[in-house]
Image 1 (cartoon, rainbow, N blue to C red):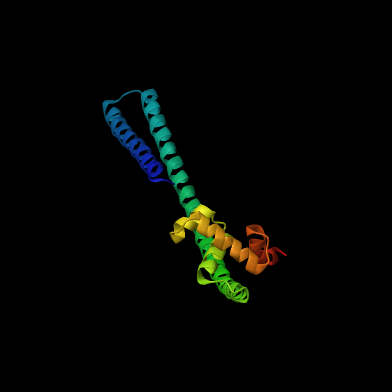
Image 2 (cartoon, rainbow, N blue to C red):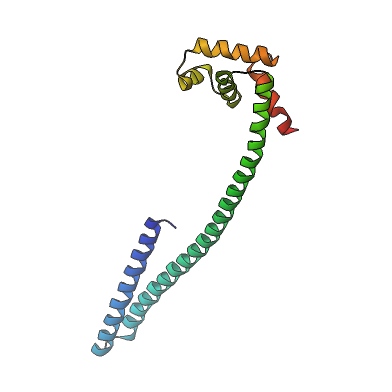
Length: 169
């Protein structure tokens, strides 16, 4: 329940409570004045309607609070699952990073080529890689060609597939 809804419910409940209180005070005054019972029944009906509205508002508040507790519990559960998943993924990725580095060494990639290869695998464009490395796109393209040549792969797709293909089998 948002703060706006809480405020609205509080205002409605307060107004209904005030109407009920003022009507009860009026009924007491009417009884002392000896007004007809029909008039008193109408005013007591108004009090009943207001009290029903108050009860309904309190019922809604109680239900919303229960819903919030369930939502909060589910949210905490999902956050805990998310944290555990990220830990497991990081553990597995650190092993994968070692294997990737071993292949880069086997292919005799330079430090710059290794950096570019990682960015290519991540899906960065040539322009993004050039901006990240502070070099020209043509330099990045030359180094990418060198990576493909040293690895005996046709291009970016084969390079990426080489490292991630087995993850989905």
